[in-house]
Image 1 (tube, rainbow, N blue to C red):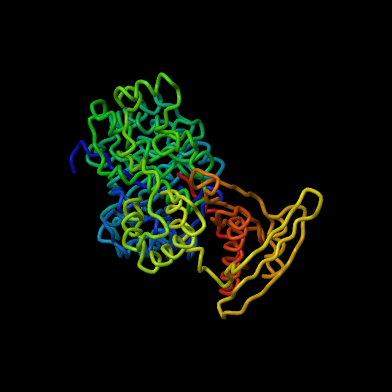
Image 2 (image 1 turned 45 degrees about the vertical axis):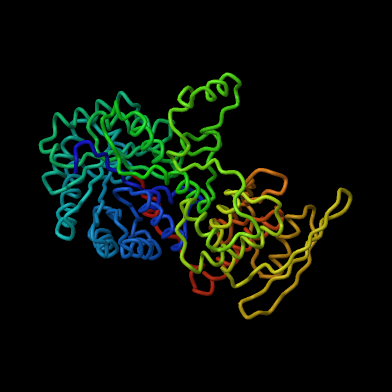
Length: 522
């Protein structure tokens, strides 16, 4: 690999998924992994196999698809974790075991209750074991940015001697600042024997809003792998944003002297996919992929843009896969044209998913005067919800007024073809619809968050609703879309209820939550 190549290590499916409300189903994880492979990331950290059977199955399924990137799994420094990672990732031609242990004084004293020497022995033993199973082993000293420099250098030296091929330096709690992080990396480069023979990596959190800046500081000081997530999602304030790192390296290539292998035209579609699956909406002013990233309203800016785009644009929207198309397709458009547009928008659908999406497209085209890319994106992102039974929304009717309770009547269809009708009243139409759903299905949930976004412009735009509800002390997330926002909310709630019922039928709802390793952070 060229010294000018900067590896992109994507941890959306591991660290990103740990953000509250961002957990994904197996099917959703596979869709994101396929999008990451199309984006051409170097490494996909697919999960933490020891966290739960579901995490193990997801990592294994992603590895077994073997779509190109190195598939990595995270492990603590113990035999059980390491064996599970190997069992999960070994199906990929190129796979990696990533082990970590905390090194800062705060973690040594309050979490691990281990002496410095014990931590080094634990790290070395884990790396030795991992190397017996896999040639590609990454090591991370958790909370490295708050670890004493001399001790950190000692740990990194021991890790390299033990056989680590990549050493990652995490700013686990987003505490450092660029100049300080630059000094840390330069200190390691100067004081650690053999550091030029391995890949030096960086992993930053965004608690002080400096994850991208800190990561770029590490790159200028010698890091050649950046760990990041799509849209910067992750625990607390999130992680370093993949799209921002990639476009900074591309836009300022003359400064950094580096390139990535990323197909930048797939950044926006991948961002939109992850946003739709997780329910974490991208802020309008988000760099690179936000709705306003290429919008110009000020008169002086517009005048400059008319003369030459470079006056106020350092990137072109086409560079990141953001189209400026207006109306697309229509109710007379055929399946082939629909497929082509879906592909142009960056989505990779199985045949049955495409068929289902096309059916939903035709239904929507009969209701809407104008169809936009955003409408197609909303359909594709919710294609799994339409037949995720056991219950389907067949029909609903809602009435409300200023001086009377709202009424909602819903008709559900089950997998046997039988229909069930329920009626409920409440102070508002959404509450009435939710009550009717609860009466029909016997599942009572507590609504914690309700978010509504418009998929496109216009008064007939689709509403995209994301709900987060509590059930049995767990949080559940659902999505729904419709030109009727009450229907969209009802579909979102029904998706959650269906998932709860399916898990109950499998005997999973009563299972105790996974231990805290589920929230392991580096």
